[in-house]
Length: 311
Image (cartoon, rainbow, N blue to C red; front, side):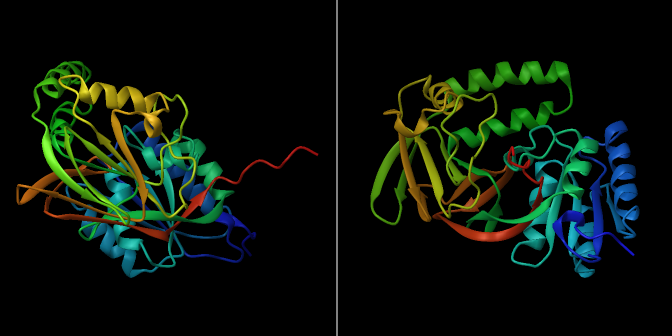
């Protein structure tokens, strides 16, 4: 008989393991698969395993969803996590995220260890939580959506992914491109007011970024039911560098060079019919106007159990 409490669920939950072999897979990833299977079978639960590779992620997700498991242990980068979340949002299935990518933003926000094997141990003993998600024109995002010329810089990161020399070159190319991008005229409207910004980039975050100095921006709350909007006011060639410095420095909410709003809904319009956006780093081409909303508590996840308070 299985012990109670695996993934914070009493009884014998049904579990699926979905791994993307293209997301930082290899030594640590293979050990993580073995570790999660061993941890689950050690509790008397035998998971179904779905391996996605060779462009077959959507097929693996569909096959996994058809089983309607209580828990999906998903192993992959931010793009994989986003695709799985799109499939299981507004369902009873909870995601246990084993980070395997380069950024792993949601895993960081959920305080999941970035080492896959350590993440397995933390989540098996973890607990269930409901978090907010964002939507833009029917497309889901979990952390941030980036709009405007800033989104165009993504292609340099994509070209360089996984190659050290190319990564260094991409930083140089990105920096030079950031200085030459033309600002776009965007019309923004929230639930209280409307305004226009000449901007090189707008970041929409599902709940505000923490006001703390950090190498990687993170969110302290994932269940406040708000979108946080950071629009870089045009200040010349260094506008995007100033935006980044303000966010990393934890002062973006009070920076006069950033138009900051908190709102459950947002509309962004432009003179052009289509805009390139980045949803959690994944490139999307979306028709204007862009209509954003937050969906409170729509995604169930497993998070590490907080330490017991001192006696």
